[in-house]
Length: 292
Image (cartoon, rainbow, N blue to C red; front, top):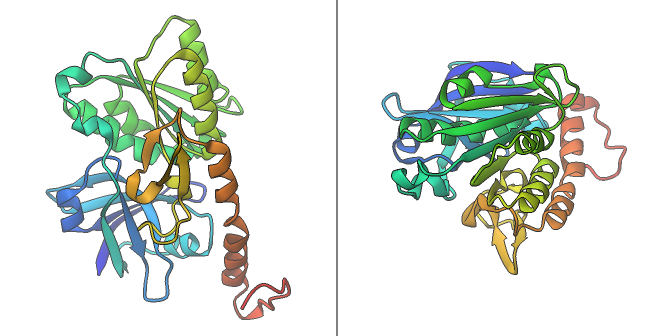
């Protein structure tokens, strides 16, 4: 069992947990993920590692309620435990394999959208610890949905906050914030964008136009997390890749986002049915004709 040592609600339907998992904490790197399972009947849920403490043997995960399983996870308290906590899985961020002195010569930008802030944070923290400067654009629909702002401000060289409704920081999307910075003469050599699929798509359209090499994390389309289910299949250039074993990070200018978004939408109906079944319990009559 893997006990929860900390539980915190970051925003509406967004939670942070520290989980005691010494082996995972010993070997993980920024960019990798874990698969968690509450109990014998629970769903296996892939989650990108938000932070880790090798000394304490803990892993920090951040998740958003999107279906029945994450709804159950949100109900766990400090002292409760996960039955399974598997990892580290996937490939580490390409940045951790670069020579530090070479990274110091580059102007690096991260663009984090919504819960995508969680997997961005460990990469920015790692760069900060190795003396590498980088800027971060954090975006959310409104101020109430921003997460980890203080933690990110501690490790980013410059932090730009954008909200769609203008309730805080720049009024507009993270993509629009990047365009404004570019128009002001700020140039970047490398960009990492992590967030909703549609956000990453439009970031890549802009960065391709601006000539900025861009890495994206395709963790939003992972389901099984081991390459067995095939749900995270995507086209990167002319090659078929699987986000969970070949990624989750890829060259954003080569990813076929339209195909990936279409595949992702196939699972929303099942999530909706599972959520209804959980919420309605014994009263759920299966009137849709598709529930067991």
